[in-house]
Image (cartoon, rainbow, N blue to C red; front, side, top):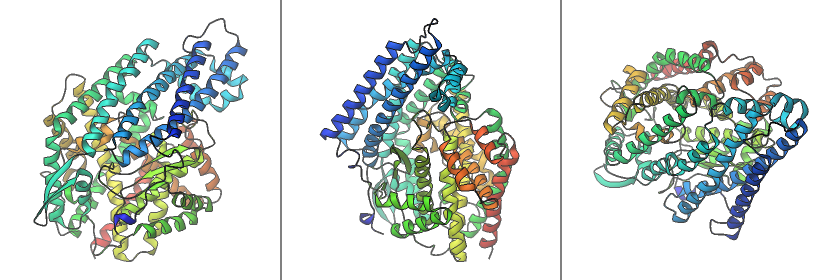
Length: 597
């Protein structure tokens, strides 16, 4: 399908342009709000509570601060989402680049105020507040978490300096990675013709049915990453070094300990999940071997991981995909189906791949119950699945829309809950209605994704752990980063892939390493938690919808283990995770049967 027919999102209903009076007014409103919030903090003495303050004053001050903080955060959220939307659809846009840089200042100010707020809340009598204030009761989890977080803060002056330095430190290095990778042009030969393509297009060739084209793209990709390995290695070393330094100064045992706190889970939960994941590796290798057999290969190379399986798999034009998604969402609930239709009707989705647009897909909340979804759509079931996945995030935002900014602070572990659930609805429907060849293609797309989220995510986790271990002592060279990436792939994929054709530059390709730490295991949590919830829905559909929506609206109101208990789930033992992985094992069995015909 020609990309010209694919829609782009409508951002004009938010603000009609980066150089418009409305943008200037919005930016001014955010700046004024931050001035007022800062003045309120100074007036009340947020971060240095007066010991002689009365309980009634503490309650009144708390309610004023929370109301203003939530309001300012909402305004900044919308403005930042707008700028991000414009920039990520064209990273060459100089006005967008400038505006994005301007956003550093208000974002830094809010982060600094957030740290002051955490320190102050940690000094208050939280139980007294909960007993006397309905506002406090509504923010109970945020309050109790702040008490713990306050113990992991440096002095106010040090935290303020750290926030200021982040703009020219970790954040700047992250931007460098984004700009370099999104604008990287790759020279390659396809079908005997020399071409130059953006890196996102070259990586998309991993899905090409022709193995020679996949191999050519893979080899050209590795050569292109080598040309930028020095600045990207510098970015990696600087970001990880900053993270180690700050974690140590704040009293965390390790960056992983800090990441677990931010993810609202504990080490026991992570180990239970990872134990079940390691046990599943032989099953994923069965899938990889079956796929190799279906492709007529002795063993898969890295560039075969995303190869389509089956002859003439069904194409999914975008219009057909949207209709299918709406219809299947409606089999779950009219609310979900109507929501999907609204997102299409109101142009929330930027669909077409194009030069300058960032690779991959994401969903972000913009204002109230509105979201925006970025995709790089191609007419395959995998793209339909991605569409459903991102709409799941948007539905989650809908369920959170009546919560305050502080109540909506959902960790990544729980942020994938609705996306995986919605993805599963689509997959099950497509499997029921498809021919054997179509079922094979659907199972392939699903197992491909599950393999990435369980096996590849584990490799990324192991890689990041090893980088942190060595970076605590010294910097790593680009060669060392590649060696550690390859070892992590060997430790997870095992004999499922050709060891001589792995991808040592995945550390350069994946943006997750250049932002928050351990932006990996939460994806596995999300997949397996979502699958577990879907299994409960299938067994006990009566009353599930209301409980599920309530769970989605509460993902910022408690830790993951407590929320899971609402459905009788114990996430601190491997058994729950094994049950979710059993569903994937069943898919592997089915895939093996279909590929052996």
